[in-house]
Length: 64
Image 1 (cartoon, rainbow, N blue to C red):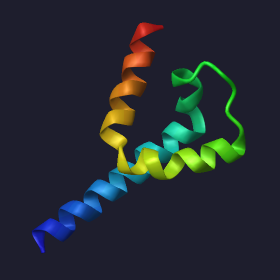
Image 2 (cartoon, rainbow, N blue to C red; image 1 turned 120 degrees about the horizontal axis):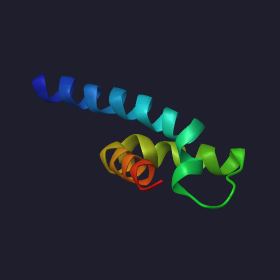
Image 3 (cartoon, rainbow, N blue to C red; image 1 turned 180 degrees about the vertical axis):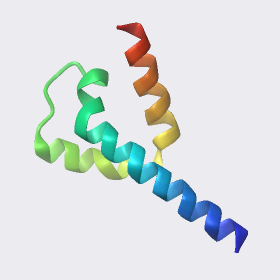
Image 4 (cartoon, one colour; image 1 turned 90 degrees about the horizontal axis):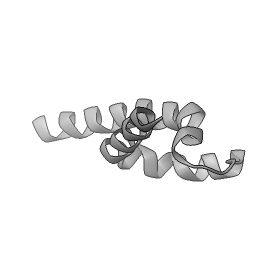
């Protein structure tokens, strides 16, 4: 049960960070314009890999 709750928490945080990243953060990390279709394709990966996405997003924000 604890493992399931941890998994749900991980996915919920991933959904929040992934959605925020796809909406406004992707333009900070990537140099080229991103279409709506590309954002839709980026969302599942951003949800699953949210710790890396958050780290990269924060790193790009500090560099500017």
